[in-house]
Image 1: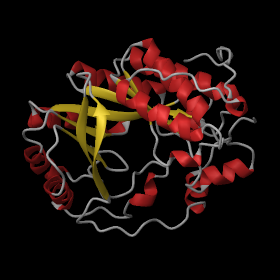
Image 2: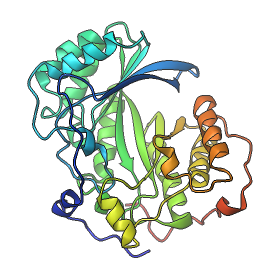
Image 3: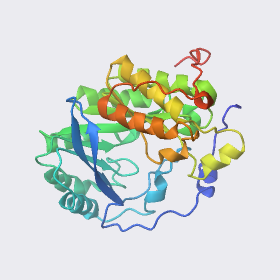
Image 4: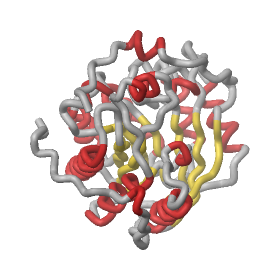
Length: 327
């Protein structure tokens, strides 16, 4: 595969379809999911997907803009969304407040809403938010103190440690940015979760497996407690355009299983497969159902599943991509 060119923001935006019509007084999704916790138990998590202004950064792989607004919403509305969601969900020990951007971006989550959100989290054991490294600063520390003894966990997209691909798919972040954010969080007792991409534009074949594994290793070396492996899917416009140009190749469940089980066997922390819209990457009709079920079980147990043999999706394990050393 040819080296991925740098894609300007205007091209990314031009490739988009229409975004969803959203109500700024309600989260665009809310439900209870089960997750293997840091305590080694399957526990309920209230997942609340907040409606707010789009992230200011234009990552090539991102499709979250589809569930965002074009303008900043008024003070009090995001806190109201959290209150409404928690009132309409069963009581859970853990909460995820995901917002298709950065929780500590004041244009997305108004600073005036944070005290009320902290009050609403009273009695929980943990809350997970997501944030770009550029917004990881003293606001994170202040919020962690405000919700104490509730444990704060911040999820950051590491994406890939490939030094040729990262600046082309996420030009707003360097590995040094991630490292600095990780240091600030861990030094202040804030847990860190990392998103790892499998098969971003610019990676193909066995190479993408190796870079995903290297990314997991790098994340855990910086004190990350949990990695979520996200297979890059088409559907955001620009990824579809890159696929037509031969610059993006869809991954499959066999590769996802290989990467997740590698991370679990390493024994440094929890590793989950992101199975959202998994049918869009499944590929093989003979083994996709079995592999989906196996990955769900692995997510729940944090143990590799029994091997599934299917000739059409066997993984050829790659050599280490030493020709592109980390900076």
